[in-house]
Length: 155
Image (cartoon, rainbow, N blue to C red; front, side, top):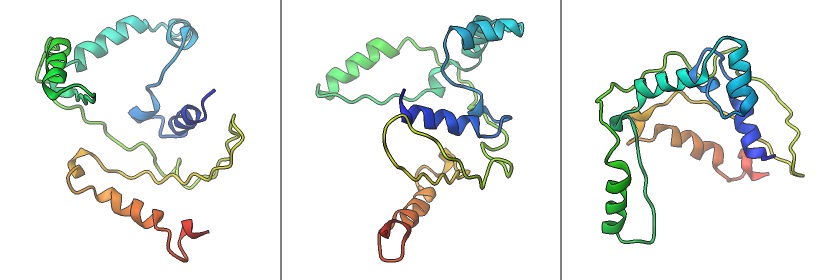
């Protein structure tokens, strides 16, 4: 088992159950087929519905990194991704927030698989891609991450 994956799943499990963040995850035969089927849900039909609603080039991002030349990487990208249709869908808006007052200000003790001691303080900030250029949330990270005398990390 992977502690990082387990912690990410923990964050999802303890988030607002009405928000999209808590709903999507990975699964196996039991969680993706048997459990939904018992509730009358056809997973394949739901996946096709999702594909039809959101699969559009204008809603996707791609990062390519490699030792090859930019021209060669660009050729590969065109070959592999040019066929993705651009249906010009509107960017989906998710109402609400991942964490409400019911999910915040909690203390959890998670027993890791590996032998390690870690303190994680989770500060969910309601920021979106509209602050991409200003990176306002980074100021908070710099304040918390400062290592001067008297700071959280000085110890």
